Length: 452
Image (cartoon, rainbow, N blue to C red; front, side):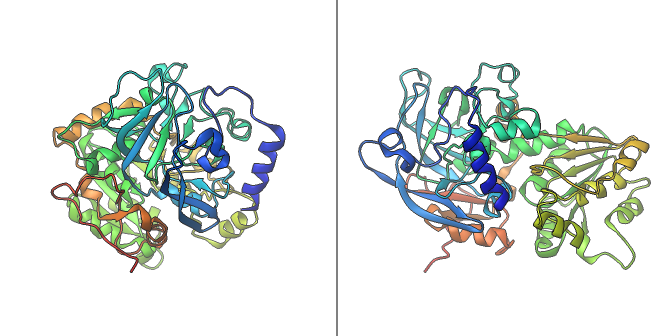
């Protein structure tokens, strides 16, 4: 948390580098009502970050069009992602009080700027979680998550040797854009970053093109899962679940899903949806056994492919716990080391869970000596995949409803964050409704209410 605030001060002192072509640091219209808020004075329910482990639902100003390619959406669906928990925990730097969260959302077009011509009022659309300009070197290849022109952050550029695209609701480190866990949202370059949803794809399916489906698909194809592979996946959350399904789609022979602790129930949940998977609970290993030794017993030499669908903030041992607490590292290397030592020689390890900075005790020796390929999958380039995945939904080749367990209201998002953080109520993936949402689609959960 202290590191995050220090990063805010440094960024403010150093300043941006003026490469962005869209307004930066407008994470809440209340930061400058005259410039960012709708002149009607209308307010909206929105979830904001107020400090480490503190999110609150507040009344915030409705956003206005401020640039000619903006689109204002009435949000009809959003969700809570595992990576939102990194913001909750203060693991991602440059959060500021009052930042509106949420990077996965869909909605209806309400208003637009003078240069937007492809939409009409009421069109149903889903947003990509990253903000792309559509014109730079990366955008021309549909590598939208690496857009060169929508994130001006100096610290990210210094740490990474380059910047990611701007991202909705994901700190000033990624440009400082208000997110979609709200009743309205402003979408910069809306003509680029919104995908129309057809009538035969309800919000409860189309919403997840925003992130989770594209991220899972990218994890699988970027790591090169192919016919006959044995795949081990760390993390049985929504990304791990969909990556398991998509590994089979891409020809995997076996998929082994690893999880444990308070999230152990997720192994049974995914097994029920995907009976072909095998599971490994790291919290109930036989005495003297490790995840690596068990995987090598299950498959001679270990799996061909390891996929990391957890994140770097979850320390398993005391050494990493204290090093992270003291700021000696930002991310633990424990899962990465398990992956590297578990796969066959010349195996492939893909990292999709969020890692934000630096790690200690990394087993570079095994990586080099055994020829293991370590692949940073990157923030998934949504624009590269979302049209294909939309077609797969329509054709029944993938079903995002398999991970959906709850429908909740935006007014209860603070409570939902707490439950999701604790892996409670068997909450795998939520659909967050607003006053603009349609009734639940057939086969989807009814509304769950937590506040009396």
